[in-house]
View (tube, rainbow, N blue to C red):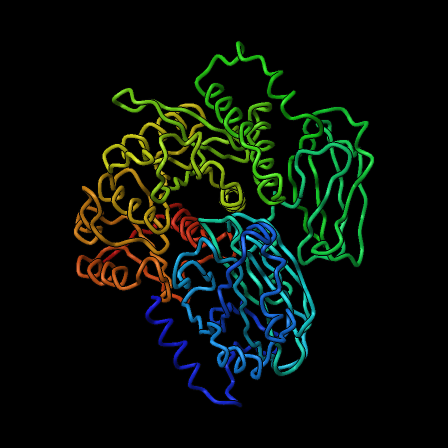
Length: 582
């Protein structure tokens, strides 16, 4: 990769004055889709003097100033000047909007800190849109020289659409400029940037921040709200009796710059409360905890935890309670506190819709899964089982999958919308095997059928990437167990002891299968999925294949909607007695 970058640098250095260096994207009048920015002109990375500053504060070093360039502004003459002075300038062009800057460091990144990125946006007319952003470790974004947003000390990208900044594009050329800093980060030096129609940005915010709009979910005196693209709204704080104990409204406020606070909470009793954000006709809800969270944890009567479920829930609470995050990073503290509140409330209220549950498989092996049902009293519910990608831990209680609340909540909301229950399994973590996963799924179904009346005839399977491959393998192992399977960007190759899903096609029977794959996927190539579909048609199988222009990065967290729509259609056809005919 570095070699390719060197070639690009050389090509740029040979360009004369008047060259238009900046890659461009076009935004049509009143766009009906998200425009992802995948190409940038990059300058850097610049080093920093550890004797003069540290990795945290190197973000504030103005590396372009010695070249007469003001941060936030750059033009063709500036680029020509940088090239003449031997500054590293090159083009980034990706198939995904997630730019991983570690891939563009020519040598040791340890002493490097800041990259500068620039791109042009051509708008068919003057129009109001929204920038959808995510990045780490620290970044600042300018549009046409105006500073839009600063995000500091953010260790990782989880949402991939985390900040929503309303902008006005002028007709013709608009220049985006980004400064992004690595800090002490060794895992992520990434940026995601896209332009969305205002209504779509609002929808993505409601999906991605459905239960993550409170900046300080463990609160003392005041509650801070992030409202993304919404500049007006209302916030209510409700107690367990559904009574409003605090609240306020805001109007014409940009919460990217000016926080919205609900103050005067100091005298409220300690405990769990429900924060409700009303924006337009939509309501978002998030649990918060008022008071000293560790007092709550230490006050739990552990002798009363007489079931495996309660013990697992307590272990999860203990685990997240021991995670404080960096005090320098508001995003890390927010992430950890969101987990504390979510899993603490699940332990406190066993009627909470999402819970950790336990099982023992046919060999007596114990395990933990996550179960969600909007109403557990409803009988004969169909069940969606989510197979995870390649997790590397020993226990779901302490693994990423349990802590990725954004995705759990997005999946749960889809299940509620379509009338499904949903279970997220662990698939053995680092000890994955198809046999072990099959036994886990069987044990999960047995327990949920026994206790909640889950319909054994309506079990659906889904997953993405490696999880998609594992889902297809499970379908081949036990085709009679599932009513349908829908996967996104599956890896269609043999891995470990598993045969390729293509080789297992004859064992999948007539179970309806849907594969969705983006032709620009940079992690899971599309060709094997095309082959899977082509081979399935030779067997006359009930396989549908949808290919789009997408890539592996998903800015909106409800990307499993296609699966639930497919399962809902299969349910309807089952009720009407429609069967597949090759």
